[in-house]
Amino acid sequence: APRASSANPRPASLVQVMSALAGVGLRSNALTTLTLLVCTSPAGAARLSPVQMQQLLGACSAVGVYSGALWGVMAGRVRQHVATMPPAQLVAVLGSLAGAAHYDAQLVGEVCAQLAHPHALASLTPAELVQLTWAVAFLGAGVFVQWQCPVSELAAGLGEMSAADLALLLWALAVQQHVLFEPGTGSSSQHRRGGRARSLRGRSRLQGSAADGEGWSQADDTHPALELLRDLLARVARISPQQV
Image (cartoon, rainbow, N blue to C red):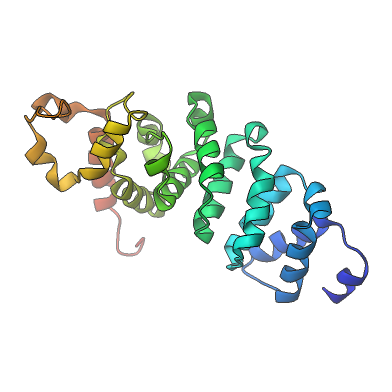
């Protein structure tokens, strides 16, 4: 780090080294400080590509480096390129924000809007879908953006998910409580409020009730979201103690 500091290092090189160290769980305080100072300056940030900025966010999240001001600069830089970033990179951005518990409502909203398109969801692996669902749940994104859980994509990928992915997905669905959303109603603030207010435990009390136009009937037992939940619970129940 001292040698790099005196050599006017390239921001991209610093990001590459920091990402490599983070990948094996190592952290250099001196190198981290230098990297953030260089990469979050106006000149340094301008020299980083969206991918490199996402890598920097991920590395900082992985090694537990956080500064609200510095993260704000990095998130602002990423925000300029959300429309052109591949879906997998956008999921990684959300995961980094969640890992660092950094709440940038504008960035999260724009990323969720991009990922809500069917073609974007279709390009994600099952593991990426789980990371997306977890990050949205952790950040509370469903509260302030028009987000609907990708039920069909998650259901199709259950067979390829690891035990850790299955457990994480179950947690994310429970936190979001989006599992009860009807298809096509995720954009309604009324339905969002209703979905947040409901719990899975309270579903039996809602059956047959149509007082607010959102009641459940016996026919709803075939709802795709409930089928996803049943399948997920069955798979989680088969996780062995060794896998846990």
